[in-house]
Length: 316
Image (cartoon, rainbow, N blue to C red; front, side):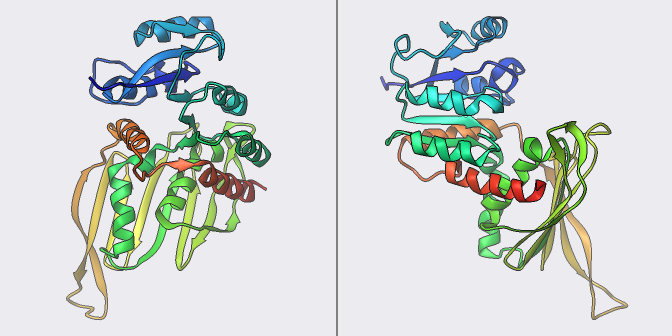
């Protein structure tokens, strides 16, 4: 019988598992992803909020629940999952290091303070991997799109347009990490005025970026009106549009114009469902692969520094 990797969750709020249910096949939280993965064993949870701690431990049948992280009380754990509020991520990570796991997996962003990130790198013990949960890197659609951009399956990538709201750090960071994942280095060009639609310390901005010859135009709306997260990739031979807040993908292909032979037109080729409900499960499949020594599509601490440096430029 194989020995399962022992996991502790630090922070028992919504993304940790309070908002999920075990009765559906959809996976939207860490606890459910862990319970569905046969490589991991969720053995312990920690939260200073006693009410949340009790609800969480009962909901996911976790026998060991604590109000704080204690090296003496915890048996050996292989992975620590950080789901505390962003403002205490650094403290939570440093406490998790004391447990000597092989891997620490933190909700995004680790911090929007570059000095915090540098301190974490300095204090991180050798032999412990630190990864960040920008879950779109594990989505099959985006991982395949990355390959197809490189292979030029749809011709040259000309430009990307995107739209989001609910804060540059909170939600826009997903776009920035995704662009880094798909394209590599990004150059900041300009930004618009802030829209305070989520948190007074985290407004949304429209902004322009560039990666090589690819221009990236990101627009924002107001989250008080409705939620927004869509993208469009314009290639020389096709347009791929992720719409309805990542629920649907439209593919447009070239059609020759009859009256204007020098110009091409576009027609809808096909539409398909954007498969997001398995994204969280794939994150943990990637974490399993990481334990097995394989290369994975996950954000590391150095990727996160790139993300936060660009966020600083946009919000400056």
